[in-house]
Image 1 (spheres, rainbow, N blue to C red):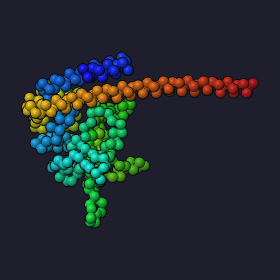
Image 2 (image 1 turned 60 degrees about the vertical axis):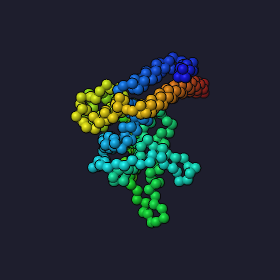
Image 3 (image 1 turned 180 degrees about the vertical axis):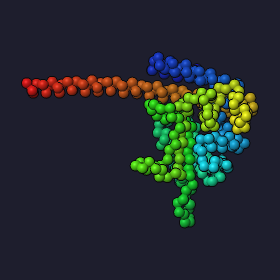
Image 4 (image 1 turned 90 degrees about the horizontal axis):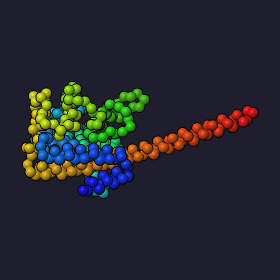
Length: 311
């Protein structure tokens, strides 16, 4: 009933387009209810993401995923989970709370974030979050030459970072570079953005391990069984086994259902954001048309004045 009131309010304000969105969201809710009863968990829920990637017993899954995404020279062999909460220099400073925070055997610090709802200034947020593992490396009370170990920020986002950008590019690897020479200036800070909505490959077009992970992140909760071509892959076989709702305890199912509800709320938030953006674009279009009309009229007046001066 609460959701119905929200949808009716949106429909009243935004009209037919919102009505279409209403059915899209209802489909997502129905899909989530199915997740509760059978099949596999949704990896894009907080519970699902942390169950698969955040538990010590599943560390090999996270290592395989990161190796597919980062392609670090020599690969990640060892990984330790760290405290995902980072406090500022003083208590009143704003904290950073990551989905996952890890350190490799070589000392590289890796932040992993999964974000479902579009967020204003998301790139600013990821930069701010990356500042914490940089600052924590500062050595106090003795001589320090400022040498840092690499910091990597991996961002899995279920939205387009720039909605208007027309591209099929679903991965972005960002480093500090010299804008004139295009050479990397500092290679110890890396931001990775995986835009799931831009990944549209079908199951028959998956060509490497990275493709397989992207596809599974998107579609695991809609699958009836593990695909045949993944059955001989130890990592994915384990992933599908760990993700079975039927293998979860009652307490885990309760936690998962709560996470699903939060996911539904996020979908509604995404819908409202989408509607707001469309309304803004409509207003911008109207203003642009008015500006064009005024500019055209001014040009006609200027031409008329010129002709009168000639005569």
